[in-house]
Length: 236
Ligand SMILES: [Zn+2]
Image (cartoon, rainbow, N blue to C red; front, top):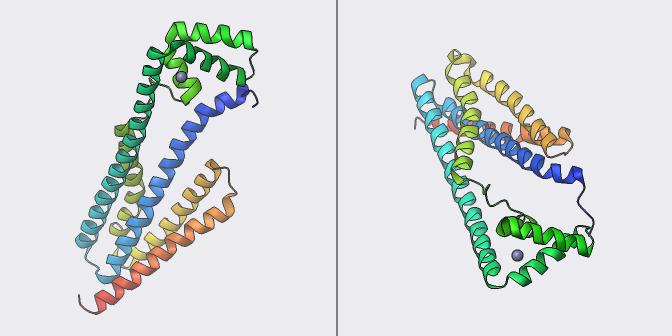
């Protein structure tokens, strides 16, 4: 066990912020790809602007709400398990305070303090706010800053919506002949950017991530466009 350095302690807070940023980029990416696939597919079948707008807007709303609901459920579950862990900790502190003090002492020792200093620190932390000390040192969570499911849901909703707006506008704004080319080019450009950003935020090499991201989006649009053309030609 090595002592966490000053930089590592900061990396915790920074890491949390980067995770949010990465989730936002991925949410926007989802919004771009799924809405682009949808509107390009419909454009294969019809040139009617209001049909395209209706389909794109429905896709935007359905996708953003589905993302928000999924995020809400997953963060709520995480929050429940953190609350359960805190409740257990609270009970242990009440029922066996001496064992808990010893536990905290050992955890601090593992982080590089000498036995005496660890004991002294554990006593002071316990006196000030025992639950908070155990939550942070033992569980790695801050009881005052549990993840908020509503914030997470709202963030996903916004990220997806921002991404989805691009193909939606690109398919309805240009004149009929330009709709698909403008959408394809702007979507592939945006996917280059989101692929690059998510790779940078994840500290991976951006080249391949960009390529994969662009290829995925291009494939989605090609498949739905072909399906739309077939259905349109069949007069469906
Ligand atoms: Zn404990």
